[in-house]
Image 1 (cartoon, one colour):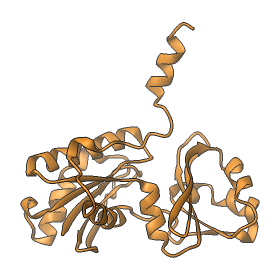
Image 2 (spheres, rainbow, N blue to C red):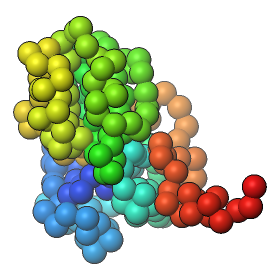
Image 3 (cartoon, rainbow, N blue to C red):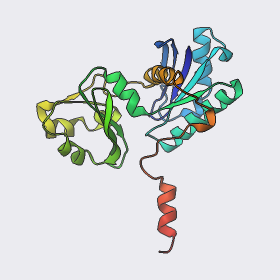
Image 4 (cartoon, rainbow, N blue to C red):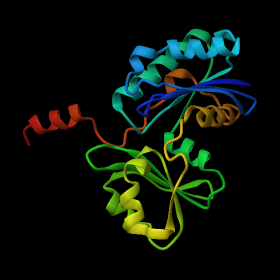
Length: 225
């Protein structure tokens, strides 16, 4: 099974190809927050590099969030267009699940994605299974709940707030190396696994919105109560 995956939830973003559960190519976009300028060109360049035609792809995959609302929309729309055009399934994978997979066999993993405004999107995994989250909160609030057990932190939120993590948890906290890895490779592997267990029509993919958009908040503020 050949899977083409895309992540546009992080600042740089990435795309990857996986064949039968093994990543064969992964490419990082080196122009932060410029997804609309590079898609679908980056995907086509990756296929050219692998010597593959788009028609060879069996499954398309996209990160569903959390992250930039604009990035989410661009990434999902791009992969929906390709999947519809080729008549192939489209699997959505959360960035949290991808980060937890990258972390490996760690017994306790805190996946943190930068939510700006001094907050993080977060989920907690134990032995590879999500046990808390997803939430958006200030790091200090989340860290108080994580006291007492060794925890690996991974994601760009962990990178941004590494000093706070170490200050609050001390030696019980470890930061992954690298703290903010590209996600597309893990998304491709997880999507390949998911594709074997059910139907995944392109229209069914749903973004993972944890925080309401600024437009929604502004609209509610204008609505009389």
